[in-house]
Structures are given as C-alpha cells and as structure tokens.
Length: 347
Image (cartoon, rainbow, N blue to C red; front, top):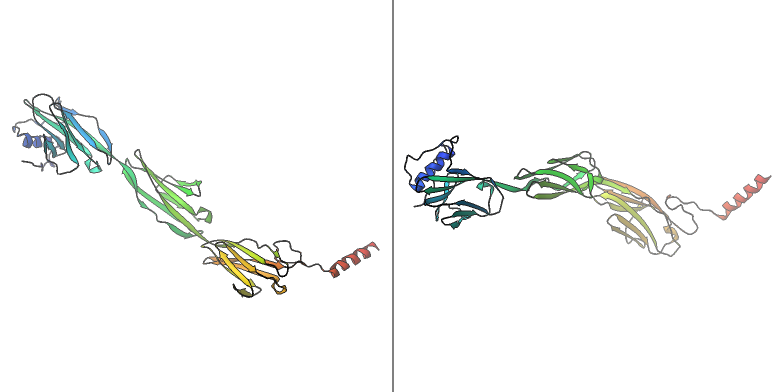
C-alpha cells in the first residue's frame, strides 16, 4: 500500500521524519526522537548541493549490510520506499537500488524542489539517516519592461526594468544604439530629464546573476519640429533643366510645400514637378523660361512646427553668392558709372 504522510506541520522537522519512518518501516512506537542538540552518530548531514533550474538532480546514499528498509523523503513526503514509488511527480524516478547504493533522480528541477532531502535506512538494529539541502539557482528573467516610447523633445522620460532570479539579479541600463556610455544606470530605473533629439535610440536593460544574463530593449523616439538646411541658389540657362533642392531634419518626417512669392506651387503645373523623398524635396523645371527666374520658398511642416528657406533660380546674367537668397545683377550701365567715378577722383 502506498501513502503520503500528512499532519507533521505542527511538529519539529526531525519528529516528522521519525513519524514517517514509523509508518513506512512499521517501527516500534518506542523509537527515540532525539533533539537537535544531542549527538547523533547515525544521522549524517551532507554538504549542500547547488543546482540550476532545469537540470537533473541525482540523490544518492550508501546502503551497507543488513539493510531491511530504505527510503528517500522530501520534507514530510516519501518519494521512494525501496523500489516502490510513492511520489506522483513524473519527474522523479529510481536510478539504482542495490546493497551498496540507493539513487533517485529528479528531472527538470524547479524552485519548488529546493529544500531538505533525507535518505532513511533501517538496519537490523537501528535506523540511520543522511540528509542534504538542495539549493536551486534560477537564471534571471526580465518580467516587466517599459514599452517602446514616443515623446516630444523636452519631456522627462523614465524607463523601468524588473527581473526575477536566484541569486537576485543585478539590473542595469545603457544606451545601445547609438552607443553612449555616458547614459547608463545601475538600477531598475533610468531617468532622462528634458530629453533631446540626440537621446533617441535603442536602450538595453540587462539582468544578470551567477547563472546567466537576460537582456531586452526599448526603442525611444523623440519628436521635434523641422529645421531646414540653407537653400542653395541655382543658375540655369534658358531652355535647360533646373532643380531646386530642400532638406529638412524632423521627427516625424516633414511635409514640404513650395511657394513662388505668395503663390503655392503644385506638381505637374506649368512644366514643374515636385518630388518628396524622406527628408528631401525637389522642385524640377524641365524647360526653364524667363518667367521661371526668381525667388522660391521651401516650407517643411510637421505637427510640432515649421521652418523655411529661400532659393533663387537665376539666369546666366546674374551673379549669386550661392545661398544668400538674393541676387545682384551687373549691367553695362553700372560698369560705365564705375569708370566715370574713377576718372573724376583723379582730378
């Protein structure tokens, strides 16, 4: 008959073991129960065994001569009595049982398996026990992590990372991409006050103990209004192709609008094409005419603001400084006035 021993929680651990052995081996009721302070040459304490979660644990004790009964116990529950399995746990099985050795194994060890195990042997004269304490180590696992964030520039940001494990894992943060060693934390929390666009990127949380390392990442997106690069003036001969380019830095990406004076320009209008690609916009003239020369404005817009720049399309008779947005035209009349002024200064 198989059984599990209950009702020992109110007694001492050693008294529970003796009660289990009495039921298992049908020992006489007069079996002495020694206190922990007494010398017990028949009770051996082995060194602690440390094992990692998921591994297989082997429990072995020596038998010796004249053994009549033997058993492995976990706290107050009997796992094996000789060849008879009492445990209902499918992970527990018998490995070896002979005159010299009694070995069982527990597969896929978990934290709940941690604790005291006893090998009890009944000889023809008296019982003896061998006990061992099992310590289960658990690799770290991140169980709570901030989700990917989208914030506006200037906001205060807090990233949180929580992990379990045994021994208790050490937790840290770092900026992974782009790499920045100056932005890190040795705790569960990373605070980033008044965040700038240069702090956007991927942040990594690391949880580590003596067993392993677990890492997870958070992507932080920082929104900011557009800034536009200075426009570069373009000189084109009549009848040729002319291209004005505009570049904007913004998150989210900017939408572009083109203007000639106060009039907005649209694609496919008067031989003009507007092409937007990410941070760039191009205004293309396929056949430049005299009427096309002048000042154009590119405006970049997102939900946080706008920025603009002016670009001049000029002909071969104008001299530009490249990015001034203004043009200066020298005519033969101007040159004549300069010569006459120089002659007058001589007199």
